Structure formats: structure tokens, C-alpha cells
Amino acid sequence: MSEGATDAAGHERQDTPSPRPRVPPSFLVLARGCFPPERVEVWWDERPRPTTPELEASIEAAWQAAVRRAQRCGLELYPGPLCRLVDHRVEGERLLLTLGPTDFRALVGTNWAQPHRYHELGPERFANAVGVSATLRTADGRLLVVRRGRTVFHHPGWYHVPSGHLEPEAHGADPFRAIQAELREEAGVEARELERLVCRGLALVADTCKPELVFEAHTSLPAGALLARFQPGENQALVALADRGPTLRRFLTRHRRVTPAARACLHLFGAAAYGEGWTGYE
Image (cartoon, rainbow, N blue to C red; front, side, top):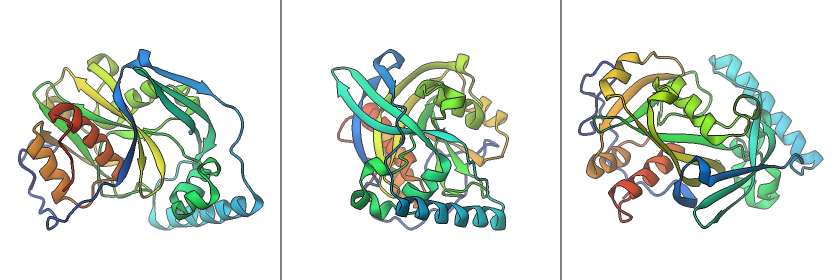
């Protein structure tokens, strides 16, 4: 059990963690810094990703397999539009993003189904749907992570952080609107209850070669209030960890099933909070 971890009922968790493995980095940091909303600039490139008939055939095959799996296992499969990362760069204190159109079908058929072909086919041919994830710190010094439900399509049952995808129709390609929506849906935090929200950077998740914008969010509410609000759904549990470097490292190294996106998010939070020498792996 991770020191200082409580569940949505406020009880100490009794999970028996996996034997302590050596956990290598499962992500690549593409950009890091402290980027409030006014320092994140987004441009939209309407051009579709380049593709080939062979790639489209493989995407369709992967999509149909995913549909069959979802129907067979009762999993949730969202087929809507998403935002693709076209380019990024840091200029001074600004994070500059160029986004374009993609969708969940292309994500399933490229980044999720064949990440091993990322360099062979070229990153520009992949969906590269932008994910958003947040480390949430409460007023009483706890970090909230979630345990994913069994019906989500990707990493069911794993530890994660409040997260989702940047959706052009729902969020207008605004990363801050996207992560505020996820914090409300997954952790019960309304935008007015956030005291601070900054982007900590951009990471490439190793197992899918997928980009993830990572955020740091501070709420005016204590952990107990959010644990009391929690309703199981897409996530089956909300877990509070003490905001201490050793506690967070112990959690990340003792639990194998922490999503790579969550590891990236918590690592960048930890490096900012506990010093650049801090790492979330051994």
C-alpha cells in the first residue's frame, strides 16, 4: 500500500501492490515549463493527415476488431472527432501548438494498433490525438489519482489521473477547456473551484507514441470533499496520496499498472514540486 493513500470512502487502501519492479521511463518529455493559459497558443491546420491505401485498410481492420472487442466485452468506444498534434515548439515562455483534425477511429488504427510502425510510416501519418491529463492537488495537500473502470477501452483497471482527449467540437481546440471538463467529470471539481491551472508540458507516451499535454491543477477544496462527491462510472475509485516526494515515488514504483500518461503527468509535477532531481521511477 502506498503511504498516505485513501479511497473514496476515506479509508486507508488495503491494495497489495505488485512486487517492486524496476520501472523505466514510459514517456519522452517533448516540452516542459510553466505555461498558464495566456502562454499557450494554438493554431489550427485544416489539412488532413497524409495517408496511403494500405494504411487506411489497416486502420479499418483495426477499427472493426476494436468494435467487435467492445461489443463482446461491454467496453466503451467513442467514435468522435479529436485534435491531432501537427507541430509544437517552445519560444521563450510560450508553448506553441499546431493542431489539426483526426478522429477516434484513426487513433485506434494507428497509435493504438501499430505504434511499432511509428517511425517506419512517419509520425505525420498517425492520428497523434492530443490527450490532456492533470495532477490535481487539494487544499489539504493531497494528490488525487483515479482507478479506471473495467469498461473503458484503454488500460481498464489501471491507475490514472483525470484525463481525456482534446475534442474540437466540445472544447474548440482549447486545451484548458478540455482539462477543466475532465476535472469536472472525473474528479468533481468545477472550474470556479480551481485556484491554479497551468500546463506543465508535453510528453510522448512510449507505448502508443501518442502526445499528452500535462497540467497541474490546484483546488480550493479538501480531499475529503472530493472523495465524498465521487460517483463510480468511467472510473471505479478516487485515491488520495500525500503530496510528498517519497510517497509519490513509492506509489509509482510499487504499482505496475499506472498508465504511461499518468506517469508523465505525475513526473512533471514532481520535478516542479520536489526539484529537478526527483524522478517517478527507479
